[in-house]
Length: 228
Image 1 (cartoon, rainbow, N blue to C red):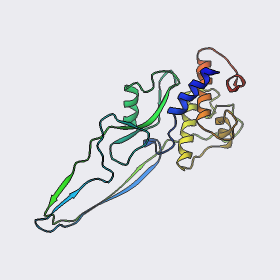
Image 2: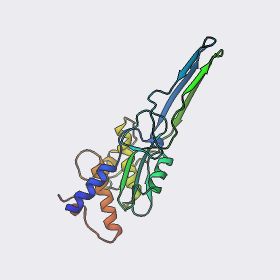
Image 3: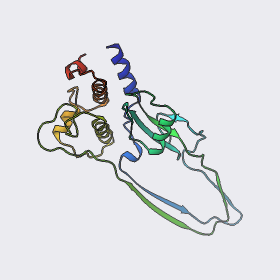
Image 4: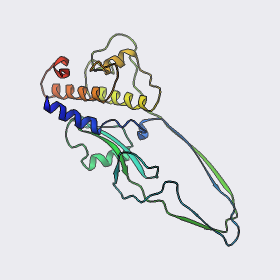
């Protein structure tokens, strides 16, 4: 059981950042830029709000608002990687060995941008307004509406694999930031593998552990895996 606790601590510490998670969740943003006229011989200095000095590859648990932070959220299922953050940041995390072993997960923010320059303007006589709207569509959990599901079999495929882990993590991340997730009660029950009445990182850990054991030929039951 000591090994379980170590693995659980590692998974819990590095998994499922329940804030904004990059391209995985829906994003809608509107930006307006207004450059007003400045009188002759005057100088105006503009800097981005929250601008700080950062270095490439700097890690943080949360963004400070500066442009250049990218969210990564990756899991090593022993065969390949589950990538649920920004694709660029996820690739950086994998290439830099953030999840070297099977069942490893990691999430956070990495600085991959450049520091915003200070902009000095003199004698501005034009006025320009730009409005941009960007929408990114999130991946969805395929709904299984009829019949009961085996514990952990969220996609109703009849087997437990990395796809079920992905959908469990996707459901947790979406619900944490208030997104509506179309998912059946049977799927939620299947995802709640420890029967705690909530789907969280602990359920993801148990599901990954169960899949890993069966993957190497250790055919334990759920009772054994969930035994305290």
